[in-house]
Image 1 (tube, helix red, strand yellow):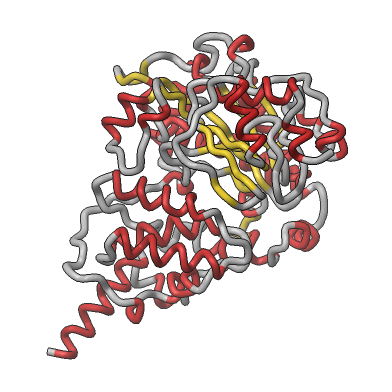
Image 2 (image 1 turned 45 degrees about the vertical axis):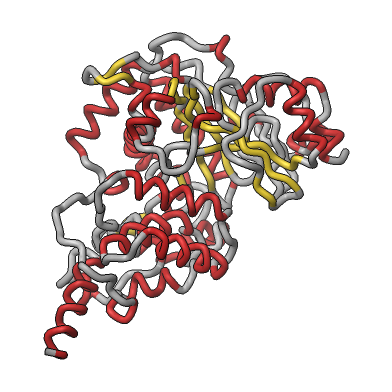
Length: 424
């Protein structure tokens, strides 16, 4: 079955149209050409038109909008909040070992049910992972007298971080029960040493749960959309155990379930989860959600790469294994903190992306730079001791450097100033 034949099926088109309601969509064509943004699909004819153009996949926003066509690059948060109607929480699990994604998925579902959340949605990502989602209607209308619709992306990050903290030890135990640490590392194409953080196995080195990098207008693969890399369909599931790659082949897909079905939602069902997650965030300030906002003076002129620490230089040479999105998060915040302007950062990252073992889509990079620019404030990259980043990515500096500089920016600023003094 070819792609056009698959997408032309009436039931597939119906599900694509259903998930598109009040959302921004983006279609991809010929497996590599991105469609325009913003785009919408309000009628079956809109879906058919994309199919005729050669659509290979469709992605939709986590946010719901009053009018997605009013969206544009560079909008301030205030304007985005005005346009936003709501948002769904989508937890994206990914691992080169699909079994690890399934283990993590089961634990997350247990955590949701522990908080009395029963009407979640579940689907195969189409490649190595699972998407678990809670519809907007399940959350209370306000938190701390602020409309819940305005808590994007912070609400998603807080709830996801809270759930990660709940399952971390259980996930580590269950993954270690599957095989030796050497075989576990081999199954995800990593070195054994990269799996050990602070002397312990860190399960999030083999299962990625993306929460730090979510920003406004973040997209996820639509249900019943095909993943170009694997050729498999992102099929909704009733339970994790139903995940079967054979059943995800286009010719074998049966349209039985919807994803984020508004008819299968209980209002305020996730209130307990949200309240406890926000309470946890206030008390815990976990490493994976750390955003250092310590005041510092941005250099008046951009610091040259000659003065960058080894960890940053290694990242700038390209990512050879997992960690491309984390690398972008580090590099964007580092480069803006050492005086680079946003146009220079974006140009560098688009060139840098070509050096990676598998380049990301350019629109992901541009959206991350745009989001950072809209924040209106400089945020330092993660501290050197943050094991979720440098060490787990295999770019940790020499101990002699990290012991004297808490943050990579400190190193660059000090070395640059020392050089200026020498010149004087």
